[in-house]
Image (cartoon, rainbow, N blue to C red; front, side):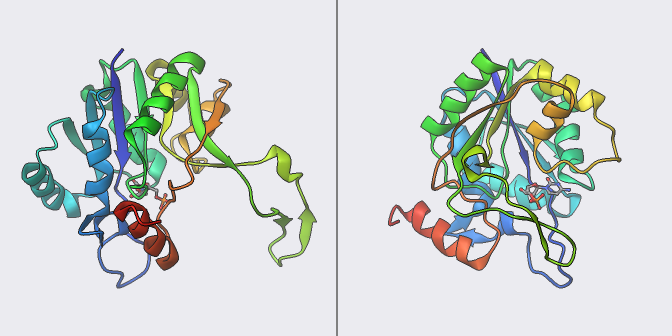
Length: 229
Ligand code: C5P
C-alpha cells in the first residue's frame, strides 16, 4: 500500500504588512513547515510528499528541502486562491498518481507523531475516508450576524476536526472532480468527500495537534515541540 501526503502550504497571510506566513515562521529553532515535513519524512508508511505553495516562497522551500534531506518531497506545486484549490492542484500532480492512500495535512500543524500519522493511514484504508477529531470542551452556539443565539447544538454529538485527513485516493479524486471549482468554500477535505456522498469516519484526534493560528497557539506549540508541555 502506497501513501502520498499533500501539504497545503500556499497561504500567504491575509493581513496587510504581515511578515512571513505562519508556516515559515520559526518555532523551537526551525520553520513550522520543516517540523511538519520531518514527521512525514520519518514515517515508514509514507512514500511521497507534495507541497502546494505560493510562487513567492518556492525558493525558500527548495532551500529547506536541500538543506534537510527531505527526500520524500516529490513535487512542489503552485497553490490556488483557496485551500481547496491548492489541494486540488496537488492531487492532479503525477506524484500522487501511484498512491492507494492520500493524506492531506495543514502545514501549520507541526505537533504530530509518526504513530498518529500511521493510525490515520490504517483507518483510511479500512473506512475509505478517516479524519481525526476531539470532543469539544466548550459549548458551541450558532449565532446570527448580530451575535444573537439561534441554536445550541448538543455538544455530545460534535467533534473538533484536525488533519491529517486520510482517503483512498480514488475517493478523494472523485470527490474533487465532482466538487464545483469556485462555488463553495470547503474548510476541510472531508467536506468535499461528504458532499460527493461518501461516508467519512472520525477517529481519535491528538491533543497536541493544534492548528497554529494565534500567538497563544505558537506559545503552546513551541512547548509541545520542545517536549515540555
Ligand atoms: O488559512 P487556512 O486555515 O485555510 O490554512 C490552512 C492551511 O492551508 C495552511 O497550511 C495554508 O498555508 C494552506 N493554504 C493553502 N492555499 C490557500 C490557503 C491556505 O495551501 N489558498
